[in-house]
Amino acid sequence: MGYKETLLQPIMIGNRKCENRFFAQPMECVDSDEEGNPTDLTYQRYEKLFNGHFGFIDLEAITVTNESRARKTQLEIMPRNVKALEKFVKRLKEIYPQALFVFQLTHSGEISEPEFSRRVTVKPVYGLEGDLLSEEEVDVIMDQFALASKIVQDIGADGVDMKLCHGYLGSQILRPYNDRNWKYGGSWEKRRQFAFDLQERILKAVNYDKDFLIGSKVSMWEAFPGGCGSAGADSPLMDMTEPIDMLKGLEERGAQYFVESLGNVHCSMEFMEAGKEDPYLSYLHMYFTDLMKKNLKPETVVVGSHFSSFRGKKNKLLSIEPEKSSMFAMGARCIEDGMMDMVGLGRQSFADPLTPLKLEEGREDEIKYCNQCMNCEELMIRQVPVGCVTFNKHYTDLFRQIRIEKGKLTELHT
Ligand SMILES: Cc1cc2nc3c(=O)[nH]c(=O)nc-3n(C[C@H](O)[C@H](O)[C@H](O)COP(=O)(O)O)c2cc1C
Image (cartoon, rainbow, N blue to C red; front, side):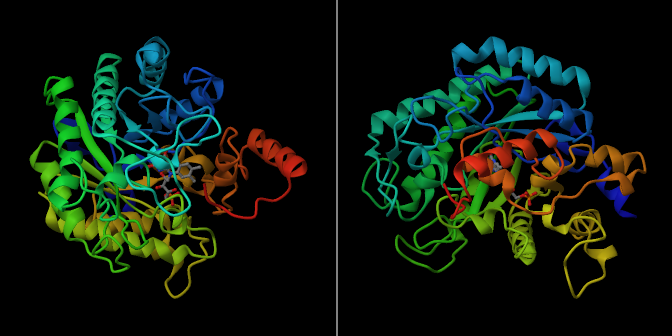
């Protein structure tokens, strides 16, 4: 089978049919209004992804509370947002009703920005001190996730991605570093219980509707001592026992899909999204998707991450023919070899939101490929609307203006 056939082949996710193997990664774009509702810029971005025929679209990290959040103009999902989000989903579903559309629910925890919100923590990490969360507060947060999930269901979206990655609250609680003795800290049994309880509360809120999709994007390895996927509270050694056990436990409790990821926005961002000097880090992600597939039931869908660096046939990878290392060829190869089921596109979905459609229509030569300039990331860190600085003039101009006003950013982390 050629890569086109593989990538355009449908797949079942739980009870739902997904049209093809393209997954639009959640990409925070800092362009909501002051109430956390979508603006024209948000509409433009998602309309393009729906027009681009992504089979599965994960709405960017949307916060379940505005008390603690990472971006000033981050999308929010609370009762006050229902009307605006309902209109948003309705509009997008009109464009390409086949797409499965889930919301990535998040709480930023220690990544919350103290300038405009409350930074909270379950155990202060060096460089990220915040208010210690009580058990009662975590209980309230879990209710906020459950309420948000009910809203997702009521407004006609297809499910949720319970965010457990990149150093936001989900990963903070799970990591071995959270060795404080409390309800969700200390032993692995107590830490993993957070993810299990959270998923159960969500499923209860949506009345265990089997058509409702539930899954998680996970940082299998946070890449710092004590981070998720390490051997102990201060151990620099990688150990996959806990992440695999958690995925199996979530699967047993009804999760239908998982999105692989690595790293943490505070300290190990290159593992999450490498710049152009490190395209080879993409291969590391495949090790983890393969491990996930080997340990989960065959029907549990695993989405691979970090495919933007493979680009088209004119990529910058050496030692392998470009025909074999292009994004499409490599994505299809990983699916055919059973390492994963879907290809996640993050930065590439900015560079060319019509990527799947162009493959479908035989217009591959018209695809614009991400050059990993990381200027989109810089816009996010600057707390301004995010998009492709290379191929979208609106963001090119915004980026230029910011560099003139504020100079070059010296460090790329939150
Ligand atoms: C500007 C920007 C925003 C992002 N926002 C999110 C997000 O909201 N949730 C998430 O899980 N990952 C987020 N990511 C990570 C991507 O979803 C993806 O995992 C990463 O970019 C690697 O995939 P790629 O090589 O296709 O870009 C973001 C990345 C960038 C550059």
